[in-house]
Length: 234
Ligand SMILES: Nc1ncnc2c1ncn2[C@@H]1O[C@H](COP(=O)(O)OP(=O)(O)O)[C@@H](O)[C@H]1O
Ligand SMILES: [Mg+2]
Image 1 (cartoon, helix red, strand yellow):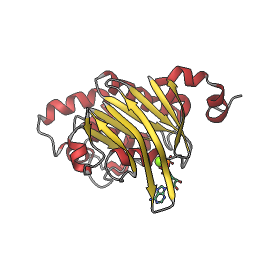
Image 2 (spheres, helix red, strand yellow):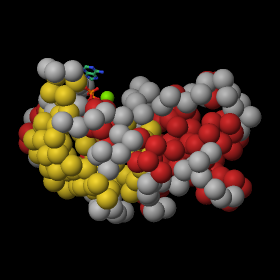
Image 3 (cartoon, helix red, strand yellow):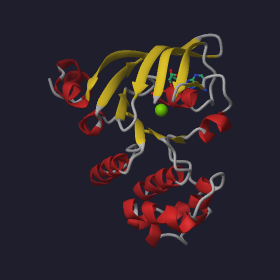
């Protein structure tokens, strides 16, 4: 579904944030890209979304080359991006936030939100409440719900567990699995290696802009290098 080959991205003239990234996401998969702070995770998602230009390499989505396209065209092809820090509209209600996610798509609001409320029952309870009054975890659900309103083929999540308490983190990862089971392909970038690897079909490890390891989620969970660097055990 998504195929990146040799993608390099530079900020200004000097900061080489991504170095020849090759990564593939197949239909139906949850693919995790894990890496520490500053490794290039957000840069990578912004590049796929068309928010940053590539220096080299190609990005294909369903066999169409998308790296030269503007962001709105890429989004119209069915790629939704939930940015780091959620970026919901704090003063707008939950309902209005969801409507904004659906504005460029036709279709029945009731039918679409029904599926959504099965996954996020809490959003139904909070429909009239301003987005800014939700807890961090609920805001993350709203950001994910808003992205799903466009009925994307590929959902990209930038550190959905950031800043959340452990119970909420577990809940969010459970929801990511539910979204996957309901038929949406997922590319997840995270610092939380343990939880991501345990739900990912396949994963890649990013270090200073380079992919240093790849494998199935369970293989990487067992990998000594990963255990040492990311899971706090030796
Ligand atoms: N707008 C920017 N201008 C210059 N350098 C940037 C910019 N955004 C990120 N960087 C640099 O690019 C590298 C990767 O950043 P980022 O993609 O945000 O990493 P991550 O999301 O993994 O924490 C870092 O060295 C960061 O300082
Ligand atoms: Mg980031």
